[in-house]
Length: 297
Image (cartoon, rainbow, N blue to C red; front, side, top):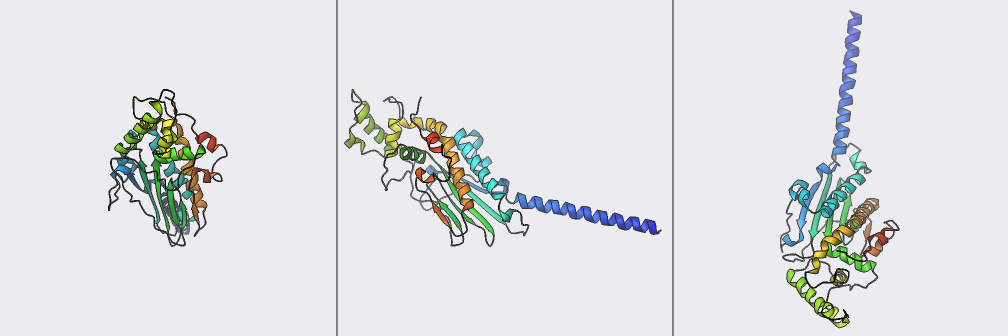
């Protein structure tokens, strides 16, 4: 009888240990899941859909964003940035301490093509305070606040004009401080194209007139000069070639900025204004690999 009782006691202890072990695994899984990309709050915008007084996402998930049917460079950009955030979160104490505090991750992706149907000066703002780690740049803006609970909010921009602007800086040209690489209207692009065609391509020897070309934005002038010289079609057709050529480095640049923000101490602020400011956070060969000499056909 004592043997049976002893067996029952031993069995109960083993069962209790097994249940506790299962609960432990479940809790650990929940901790990791709270920082996984499946639980990120994602928002996707198109610059042409921005309206004054109201900025609303066109989609709120990868599935709704239709990335499967989007051009590969943009799809790869979104997926890579999400993965970079998730990889950095694995090193955060908030994702492993099991204190039950929520981990809130909001990533807002803005797609800015060269041409937009309408324009707006309204931007998405990030809330900051003295305890936040902050990073600001033309490509993305991130705010991380670790106390009293972990919050990360980032606005990441896929911008055709910013990609061209990077090329202008890499070529050593000067960009006016007032320059703002927002999408252009179709009318503006057609006007600038006509100026370039009349000033350069319509002349027998392709001699540029500096006074006339000063009317053009510096990034469009770079695009025109580095494209196949033809009057048969709009130069912005070369944007797809730009994306295919430079997108991998544009992704690398943005991933480096994500990594950098996670390394910024609480209360600190990092700002990068041009691609040339990134020399301390990217590989030494990055600039040579990113720089485009010609957009070939």
